[in-house]
Amino acid sequence: MIEPKFPMHQELDQFEQDLKSLTPKQYPDTLSVQAKTSYHDAGFVTKPDTLPVADNHPHRSPTANRTWIQIAMVSWVTGLAAGILLSAIWTRVMMEPVPLAKSNAIPQNITAAESRFPNTKSVLAPQPSALDQEDVLAAICRSIAINSDSDVVLRPIMQRNAFLVNAASLPSTSRIDQAELGSHPEAKEPDANDHNRMTSPASEFNSLRNLQGQRQLLKTLLEFENLNTI
Amino acid sequence: MHSSHIQELFASLSSALMLYARQWCKTPEDAVQEAFIDLANCPREPVSPKAWLYTTTRRKALNIARAESRHRNHLVQSIQQNNADRASEYWLEPNTRNGIAASEVLDGLDSLEPPDREMIIAKVWGELTFEELAELMNCSPASAYRRYVDALNQLKRLLLATNTPHVNKKT
Image (cartoon, rainbow over all chains, first blue to last red):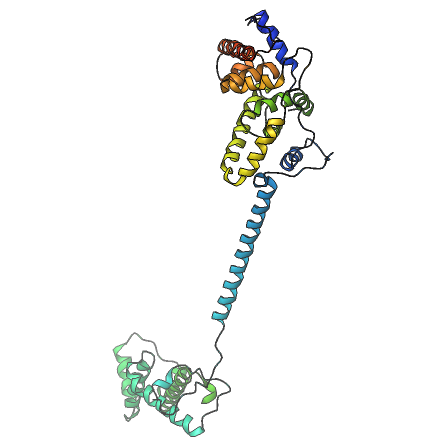
């Protein structure tokens, strides 16, 4: 067909028509394996009407490429899962506590000061004898007495006790009371309870001594954490 | 793109496209098929589907030809067998009415320059307009017209040179 815009020579037009009389080779009904696969992917046909012939170019098959991709993906995922599992097992094994091979009881030659550290002795470990416990407790008490001067809690109590001991050694505490009252003339008169407390320094001294002993014992007990061994 | 339109194009152009793709590769069916698949997957219908199909078929055929050349060392025997088969195969149905020998036309087409051969196949058997031919050849319609006329005259001279009696000897 000659377009009006581009006129063709009559003889050339005839030659063109002669060429058109030669029809091209028809598209084959039987496609190769590759052609059939792609044709199905595009949705042109739903059912093959002929059996596919052998494909001479299997390396260009998209199906084979997809298979290799799937194999590679499955292998990669499997390897990743195996790696995670092995690392988890290894971490679990390394973090597992080691069982005790022997008792960590305090050896006999340990010093008293060293025994003040927290006792991690196993419950199943053999109990020390009562004599050993007594020696350890005595050593701890001695160390407390030596360090009491520098103790923030006990030092004020000890100073007050010393003052009361000196006061108890005097014939009477009335002078002290009068002096104290005289130095503060605006102070009111003490009530009966205060009078009784001030007039019995010996009983207060005894109670303070008991208090001091109780505090020392309490401190000893607090520092000697394992009460079962006391 | 509507499937009925694709079917119409396939019925009218598949044979000419296969003849067109035969210039570059040994499996032109694959090139034509891939071109139609691309057309079906196009989000928008091309302005000129015929020219688009010819352009895509050419690209697909060149890709197939590159793949064939890459594996030439592995397929030497297969290529030799294909060449032997190609000698006996026909790409144009013989027509006894006008007496033009299809084999001579194919020989004449193979003797042309590739752009000229492309234009003749696309214009004669693909029935492309000169606007579509210009889009395919990336030139103006007037240039496509001139080049086509020149190529057609050259092919006619080649056929006359073979002393084919049924070809019009007037130029």
